[in-house]
Length: 214
Image 1 (cartoon, rainbow, N blue to C red):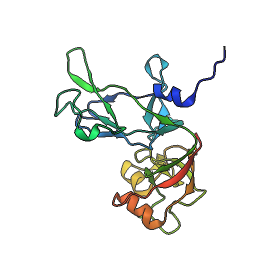
Image 2: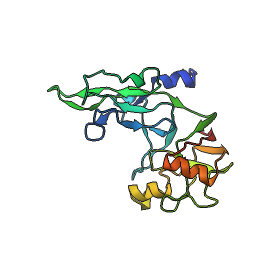
Image 3: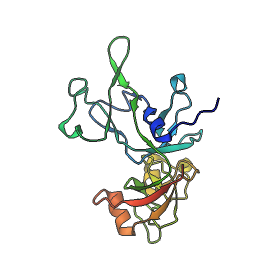
Image 4: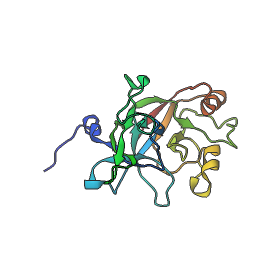
């Protein structure tokens, strides 16, 4: 048997994986941003398509796609379970609800449905650059044709050619190091040094246009 499956429809059945209580308290904190590079969890229960954002790991992860939605925890630490903020209504954010143990204690958040993007042309502000101590130098900005990989910093796309294996979380963020050697996208429409720096500083968000290759 060999049956074709529609990739967009099939990705409605992907889920962002469970989070432990220590990694995501129930105050609406962001677990994964839209535009983050994701990988498939090989240890998923029943071999279901469970995804997580790319991170540096001693066993390299293989990029699978891009998150189409922001994933947040619920507000169960400060509000009743199932509570939604007014700003959540009408948004595309995923709210992961609490997971309980046999004693009824909240131990983290459950897996939640998420959209995963593949191929095509997309605009994104979820990127970082080759930098020196968080400062983007002339020529290190996003340029058409730049190879993009998954960054160690929140699974953003990065044009940095430095492997995160030799750094720490702070230095990986400060220089935009990648956590996978696999190319995930190519820059089509870039951004100047000033725009990239403003985007990185989160003062003004300037999008770049990329062609997704996975």
